[in-house]
Image (cartoon, rainbow, N blue to C red; front, side, top):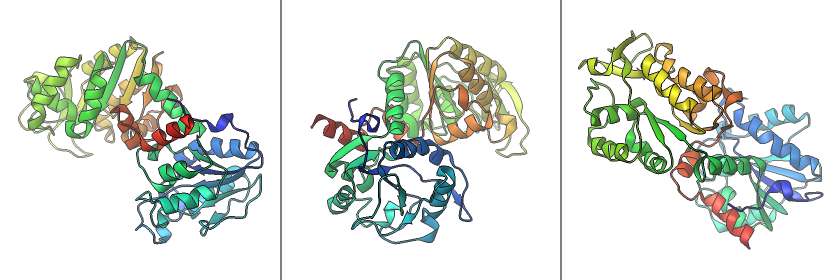
Length: 387
């Protein structure tokens, strides 16, 4: 994957527009989770160190396009950036017709989704973004799967279009895990439905040696193998699909599970052998023997891709399976990459972030890359690099 990289450019005195993913949760006007801002900070600092006049843009939430809404304003993010950088980071609302900024300064543009044409990737808007800068830097992997004005359109028209360090690192890590993985490779794919992860399962079945499934997905595979799943969430119409995937790749199934009679924080957890699952049982986690078996598989892997917790880890009594696997991944010498919202929450809960080789910041983009789909914002950078 050949793209121009911001790190290779001389930015002294240049006007640099950086598209980051600063779509963070905000509560009562204050940033509630700063993970995405922290991930973006090194890129902003590097551009400043290189002597650029830095303009940062992002979306936040889902406002009605073309209309200002206070709840979707990036003001709390500007306040956070000012503190984090130890300098004033003004929030600029009217920027489409030009902005006064000198080298060594940084501004944050108001929510790009307040601009008409952003979602539709309108050329007229994209050209206005491009006219603001000498160099456009796409650094928002989390939005790379969307062709929008500030992610794709601007890269068509900017004098120079490059990948920022965060985007480049993400592409390198995913390439390492999927294009030529060190073998053996294990993938953990969990979630409530096979239907939402079907392309991911199919794609991974062609590259990995062990495909560990969890959650409702595992229940469909258990049913496909003729095991009882009680009143657990599963998809009867996808049993044949599960059989077809299991015929292509090794899908180790649970030998024991943790069940309850109801889905609730107060539900009583019982460990059962898979054959003993009753008609009124709900499977809410893998059992301790299964967790140990899977951990053993991970120990011998050289590449591990993790997407999704294997149980309802939000309730502690159904979190053991996810915790054991998180620890096994952390203890492994394998190159490990993890992505997806719930996965990141599990990594936080069990404190293993420092021991995972790469944690992807992009939910939907991560999944689409794993599915083998083209990410429009990356494709345009490749096109521009060729030209």
